[in-house]
Image (tube, rainbow over all chains, first blue to last red):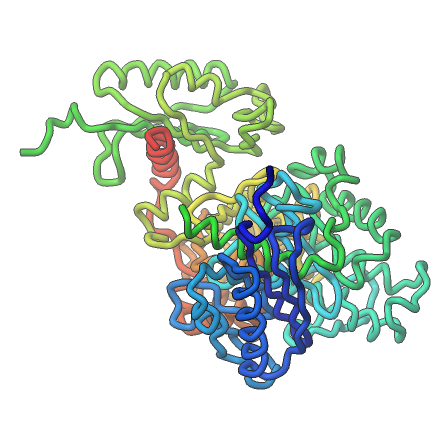
Length: 306
Length: 306
């Protein structure tokens, strides 16, 4: 007695990444009707290719909302004259480009947020953060991104979460200066993939588990988690990304290091009681990016019908 | 043609502090009909004295909501079995005491939050954060409290903001170990009143403006502000408290130190363009505490009528 597939209210998710753009048409991870990959080049040819695909999907399937989860930094402030634009990026042509205006031509609700916030919302809807109003999604790779969900929504104010760049204590005894071009030894400068490479002289995947460079990574991420616990009060922290995933040996070390850092303060006892469920891997794996964009589309549709 | 005063919808604000309890009956800073001060002793005698006063005020004036802005840490999670209780405190008898249940006997809506969140909400309603959805109120005194307002509401999740205890870089070249019994050199351990006393050997009010202990205070608070900017994205930071207020020479130093720390990253340019309006003193002065409780009462009344 189910409705025919063609009548289902489909949405489009577009993960706009620095090198590639992943698109999905569907209603969720178990109902993807079409997907595609487009190379990210300049803004106009990239958006032209996206439009071509959207036209095909509209004619064949129809869709009622679009979500864009984009590389950034982005202007997410609806009151700003540059709302919907990439703020500033070394990628040629993209600085100041108005992604949102371009996609609004489709005359359906458009959700727009950072790639990291998109994944966080997808994890809340279908993944490892189901049922939680407040949590953080941390992705460790080329950079360190943090999506902080508070009261069911990504934190926004003057800008959006950039907690990968928090100021934290230096690792004791270390002379490693860090690799962040802005802050040197912020979290990203100490614990991202390029930081590990600069520190150890080898990429993370070639380091032994006992390499001392991991001590710096664990110390920096534990300080990040400590600071997240005491600012945005997450009920859980999801750790993903190229460096975060596939290294399950890090999780027990990070759990111990966070508890040692909190040292019994505040909600530390409650965290300790459920620590294995407090720092966890994400649930959506490698499809998390475009599913994040799909989650933004669903939220935009819901907001438009309220 | 105004309604008689007795018909106005009055609210009660109760600032429950560690040594004293300040109560106000009214509708806002320009309309306070009664106020009182009660010593904070054990929980039962203190609440008995509060009840006596509430009975008088009800009979003489009437009130339609009560707000309590309390010392903490507090359990603010409505799903928790200990919601409304003081979580753990060295104050005899208060650990586990259920403040909220006791006040609900009055059969009016009861707002309940930390003293710092209360002040933040009062500053949003009547003070230096009017019109802002996202900001932080930082109070520096015996301890360092941070009220983070995101999307118009205090951040809540697993616990509440305790950002005075963030992990931050040590001051370069300093051997001062910090005074926080939990974390040593967290923000509070480096920049609170007791920290300045331990560091300089003199209380803050006796230090000259050029004392090097202020360098540590400025460095620690700038790191706190940096980390707040990148986690909760405040549109403004209000700096109050015994050590924060009355020392206007700190504000220009903190503004410069924050911009130096952000070093152009993310929203730094927007902050720099309005820096004198970004780190500011609070607007409500010494009445901020009980006005914070009054703001909680107003919010509780509004929530109950939605």
